[in-house]
Image (tube, rainbow, N blue to C red):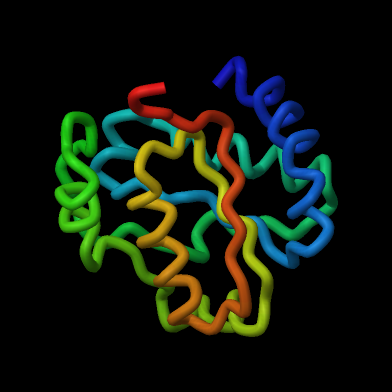
Length: 143
């Protein structure tokens, strides 16, 4: 948490191409069980700072993780996608926040893109017009 402000500033600078088009900032959510265990959601902390820096509306609970998934570490690309099947959704009472908006989805690390893809699909199903993803780090395998 101590680094979230610094990392968010770096992400804000790196995201200058996608930030001007965004109407709403949404973090990748944690399952409530994992949030309870960790006590914080790093994507939510980063997205809150980026929202303040950019003056773009932030809604940390627009997207929910309704399925507890096993950790993605060590899973193949296909296993990751399968693990996340049906994990994310936009609750009916929050769809009006998403409909017609360009969403900037925030996460800390992108590995295979399975999580970002699953979140984007849920946001698009809820009526978002577009979803961009901004992350702090990207894992490159075999580089």
